[in-house]
Image (cartoon, rainbow, N blue to C red; front, side, top):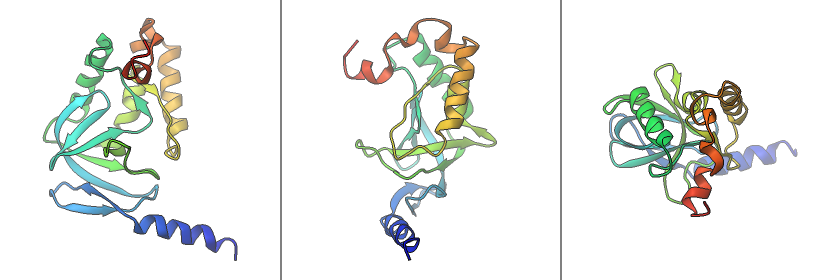
Length: 175
């Protein structure tokens, strides 16, 4: 009996679907479950952790946080890597976690470009640190392991003291 209640709650969450851009440009309902995904065509890279799909849908990569453009030289490196992994005009797969949008109305996603997991590539190459905002935690262990590996090898931002000020503290004007 009590096992039915979480299932009913999950159905309720899934029925309050969010919209995401598909490769064809049509809006498709995306259920707020950790198995939902959609495809989109990359229209523009904003920075190292944000891009726009055709139809003006702004996507924010989950769990990773790259430097802000005016924060350090690593911001440009993260933006360039994002553009190399998913060039403008390419189709990527967006994988959703439990919360599909942030307070800025950006779609939150793990991004796959072919066989590459873009979020992990940024962390593994030392161009993003881990930023966890529950309830989106499905891939946190995998992404932490990638960032830990980059830090141990002292690559990217970990090769210097670039992260003395975290990107979120920089955005808030705290450093």
